[in-house]
Amino acid sequence: NASYMDFNSTRAQLEKELLLEDVLRIEDMPSYRLLC
Image (cartoon, rainbow, N blue to C red; front, side):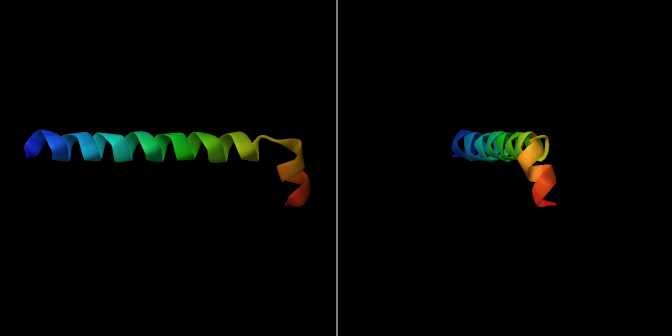
């Protein structure tokens, strides 16, 4: 089913973008900078 595959790829893309946002948010935290 093509639409099911499209849904999965879109969902994967959204999850990847959310993950990137979380990483960027963590890197902005002062505690993260202290750990590095």
